[in-house]
Image (cartoon, rainbow, N blue to C red; front, top):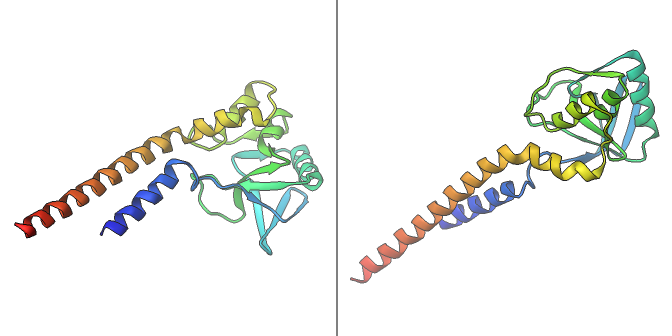
Length: 180
């Protein structure tokens, strides 16, 4: 029982630190043609689409150009999307959020304005003004998208800790009763 509680406590600690959410996955190879993006991840071809944006014809060409020219391409799957075919992803080219760049350039439109989406704040910033997606604002974005999750993780962490203490006190009380 104590081992189970310690394991639960450890897993909740991992969630509290944010290590289990929104993992960025690097693509080994990328192919883009006529707006159709395919990523090769661990020797598997994964057809993807850009999450929460609609591209114009010029946007499709620009997206393919950016994806094909990028040295590093990675993606994240938002916690709020269904697993569809092709898979809707947040796509990063050389560390920049592709959707944000395309919205800034005016070749993509935001589909849904949901503040719970992981990078919605960046899309909103791109809609309102010319702002580059640099690492200087990544800590703010990281905090804003995880603040709700942090509260839930903290609550779970606290409950698991209290349960662990209760189990330990119960076992100690039983040991004292057996000695008497």
